[in-house]
Image (cartoon, rainbow over all chains, first blue to last red):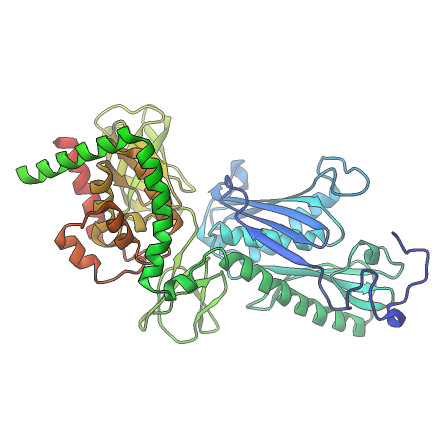
Length: 290
Length: 241
């Protein structure tokens, strides 16, 4: 699979190893509300990356010394499953996990109205089930969707993408082969799209001033593409726009489908129906007395 | 009135308006804070949240569960970030862990801790949990939905603003299904009418007249005192009958 041995030059090939254009994202899909026990959750697939995010809170921050009486504390827990990488990952949190948890927490903290929830914590748990470069940006994208799903007030979603240089060309959303290129520069970039604020920016490698300008431009453009997917994932669950515009009949018809279901169950439990009718009579007699 | 689902940070209005709930201002424009439905009128821009935990407010009727018993009083879970405390003096009978109480939020301090007033133990029955921000829909305009549910299922009902519904007697299985249905369709219109058709009941004229005025989601702040007094009155009836 690896083409490391060959001399690859994107300037000559004009196409990337996986056939993408230079500024093309890997296929991205997000599903929101996948974990019923969490206050908010999201599942994301981005190329080969597969990520779960769950949000709990705002809840009482424990241990108590972590509480801040002025704001909520965002506690992010980034973990990789043992099977998410080719070589088994030892399950304990390592240096990299701690670092990513920290930077993701700081990025999300900027987006959340933490001052609304004194003395509380917002627990964000992101689990990487499969990875292929860019897992931290994938986690950030999933986590911000999960936060919105939990109903936590935010200044905006956080959208993120990996940009950088590989095989002599500036590319968007690097995969593992590109990240391992001899001249690779990896730059995870996260912004809050509606304010344009940069909340995460790391760089691994060296770029010239000119290259950096291109990277930033391409990254912000990529973030906006990611933002559109996030927006869709969150709003599409509520088939609302059509319903509100549709006639009253349509709304009633929609209710009738579920009504049938309820009626069916009611009939099967015939005893309950009797109870209901008795109760109704009692209700009426009460009214009469009054 | 435009109805649309918005996500956090989405633009609500570029004009200057009164700020309603769940919105914030940046650069003179009004944006949504949460995932919700736009409620933008000429005077006021606001968003009705679709998801979210309960955050206590003065005058809310809530249903609490006793989580802690000490000599001085009881710790009460309200389904919010901070637990409440009721001194032993305030309640008539002794409470035990797991008991369900109903109370009114008297005051909320700057740490969002609620002081409870008029605590009252709810004996027997069941507690159904729903997404707290959708509970106004269970009460409806002027308590129309509450009345409908009570008549339709024959249950005694108390709806807490903290997403807990206490029910006793009547057809509770049916009630649970209806409550789940209302929760799932809380943001859709014509809900009350559809349920009225299903039950074959028309709610009392006085309430119906008022509720016919508007079919939209009851506003989060706009849930008037009338609704809450409705809840209180009803439970009074149940207790001292």
